[in-house]
Amino acid sequence: MIHNPIIRGFNPDPSVIRIGEDYYIAASTFEWWPGVSIYRSGDLKHWRLACRPLKNLDFIGVPDGGGIWAPDLSYDGEKIYLVYTVVRERGPMMDTDNYLVTADSIDGSWSEPVYLNSMGFDPSLFHDRDGRKWLVNLDNHYGEKQRFNGLYIQEYDPKAKALTGESRLLYREPRGELVEGSHLYNFDGKYYLLKAQGGTGERHSAQLSRSDSLFGPWEDCSFILLHSRDNPALPLQKAGHADLVDTPSGELYMVHLAARYSSPGHCFFGRETCIQRVEWTEDGWLRLKDGGQNPHVEVPEPENVEERPFPPENGIYDFTKEKELSGCFQSLRRPLCEDMRLTGEGLLLRGRDGLNSCFTQTLLARRIDRAKVSISTRLAFEPECEKHLAGLVLIYDTCHWHYVYVTRSGVRQVRVLTCDEKRLYYPEGVVAVPDGNDIILRAEINGAELRFYCDGGQGERPVGDPLNMNILTDEHVYMGFTGAMAGLCCQDMLHKKKWAAFRYMRYES
Image (cartoon, rainbow, N blue to C red; front, side):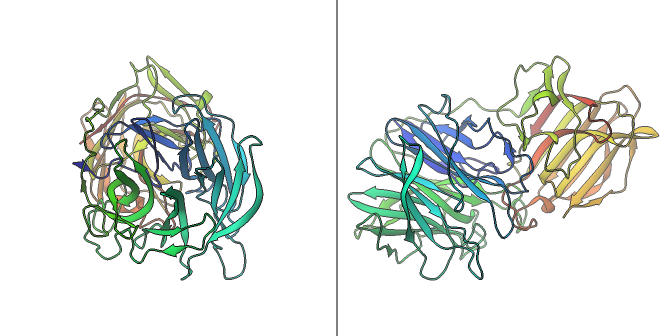
């Protein structure tokens, strides 16, 4: 059996393709750099990061929850196409620029971005059987009393590298429900439109429509293909935003996003990628093979496919020995370039902006995908004042984080700082540490409870009281779309030149 989620911890909006016997899933990365995570599998069960192709972009200045939304992977038998949105502003006018890049292989070089339009988010590219290519696009309408204006379709000319012809209304939900994350398919001469409906929270779903013509009219399926709306006890919540892929033997699977609760009613993992087996009904609709409409945790593996597991990842990163960073790490909004070095001393980070900044932070982080985990680092850092900070941060976005850090206020000390809705809180408890010693900082997460610890050479001791991990969840953050990350960071809010050396990072059950 395949066990869901197949890609854990903050990997939403999956789009899937198969090339030969290999499968690839692209997931949203929002404000984290490099943009778009693409995962590889040979059996639909075991997945490993293959690449993050958008290395030539930065997201400096984009708002929390902005950046890369809902990448769409497609393959026309010769080239791989990746369509994505860069959300630069999330207010009522919502700037959403859409681009396309191509590659001959996932591991190959990716083209420079081709600008498509700024109509709305969640575009996808459909390759019809006659060779023509069509962009499906949500119209994020700016106007009185009407935020969304349906799905539109326009032809893409790969030779001209531009959209061509008129943009036509493709589909509008008859009840006025938001429709996003849509994908077009042609099965046996009929067109099918798989849509995300109801928003990406508890009312999320995957629903299907079909037509004899590319441009409609569309017939809506009488039942919802996938959702978690009717049962808050389900282990997989918020199910929706789906895409389809077939196996070499013709079996059909559907990847989708869902969320696991890390504590009752809260999810700091963010939205993750899951998979379901689907099959055709006698009257030409899709349904879950195991029955019902709710996501299954256990799903049958493809038949006659040999398992292809990857070597296990141990979560221990020794920066004094590694020549390059693990692919699990991402930086916030920008490549660190001159502000990061990997040497025999460890991972060196040069301090820049404070943690509330949407511009030049120096921060490297990985996803948190377990409800009970210990995260630790060993740090060499000699701050000169309170504007010099370095340490271990658990962060959702620039407005929501818990930070245990080394600074100086008279003496070198370890402190804790919490940010909730951009308000700063200094919990009780400061630990003085001798100059010259390395300092071990540790975060222990147990569901909704977080404890910080430090050891400056005199034995481990707690720093402050227990903290609330639930402030780092989708449910707490208004319009939050990402997930909690564990990171190493350094701030120099005086001269922007202070360095900190991190010897290792450990992420352990």
